[in-house]
Amino acid sequence: MANLSRSAGLTGYADLARALGLDPLRLAADARLPVAALSDPDLKIASSSVSRMLEAAARISGAEDFGLRLAEKRQLSNMGAVGLIAREQPTLRKALDVMAQYQWMQNDAVSVRIEEAGDIGVVRLDFDTQGKLASRQAIELSIGVLCRNIRTLLGERWRPEAVCFRHAPPKKLETCRRVFGVVPHFGQDFNGIVLPRKELIAPLAASDPVMARHIERYVQQLAVNRDRSTQDEAAELVLLLLPTGRCTAAQVAKHMGIDRRTLHRRLGADATTFSVLLDKKRAELSLALMSQGDRSLGAIAEQLGFSGASAFTHWFRRRFKTAPRLYRQNLLAGRRAKGVVSGVAD
Image 1 (cartoon, rainbow, N blue to C red):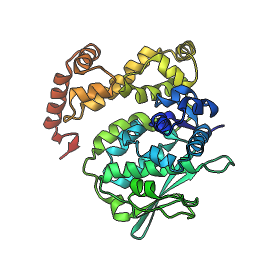
Image 2 (image 1 turned 45 degrees about the horizontal axis):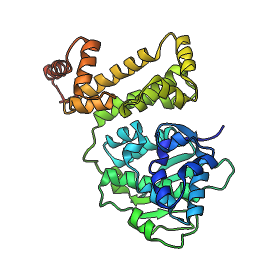
Image 3 (image 1 turned 180 degrees about the vertical axis):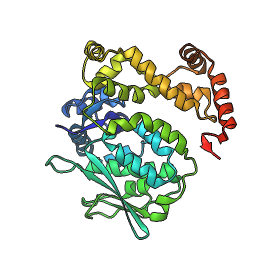
Image 4 (image 1 turned 180 degrees about the horizontal axis):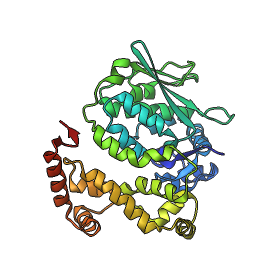
């Protein structure tokens, strides 16, 4: 079976290709990738095709740093729900563990390993090329994105102790210095990042472990059994698509590689419908988000795919027979009565 990755891995590809005088649509077609993958971040596409397209872009444009340039355009939010869970972890080590655990949701051709020895920590990326030569551009893109994600968590001034690549050095190192803040070591026996162990275990200032547990509850089951039912797979996609505001039956069906009628038929076999499934997952997630007293209704509405707080309030009233503000007030009052503050026992 071919390795698959989220098309979010191509964020910024079309703009960068055009800036270098390339035709991104032609390159996508040549690599047998759907054109929609250049604009829709949640399609599942062949990892090998992505690698071919990256290599073609670098070769034709003469930009041997293409993958690194693309990495500069990435944000932790490009990882979707996984990035959200990672951001709320108490330490970098915990955040990296989350990324490693759910890496298959981003790109199942790449695996993440975190190792510690003495005062040093190492984050290794291994690439399943299914017997083919690993793509230099795909490797540099992945390591560059990893570096940016760590920097997002630790602060913009963070620099790795070292960056290691198996392949030979490029002719110019300017982009490497800009992306990593250090000159990588080439010709090494692994691809990855080295950093002080103390940075792995230091607290992350913006973490919210309680929130992380709430969100992880809804994606944790996905790692247990990848050969899941249509209902389980659709539920995963609902959670990933809700924040985009494009969580429709047609979109979910497209990401599953089936048409809308087939989706409805298969869900019907499970005695449910897409509308029921959407409402159920939205309700579950809304209650988890509402339990966080410092989260505004506007932010919750956005996470649930509503156009604004008023639309969320209208839905919440209809679904739970109470206003969201009143629900939250009663919830917090109940916690105080039990000696619980912000979801954490005194």
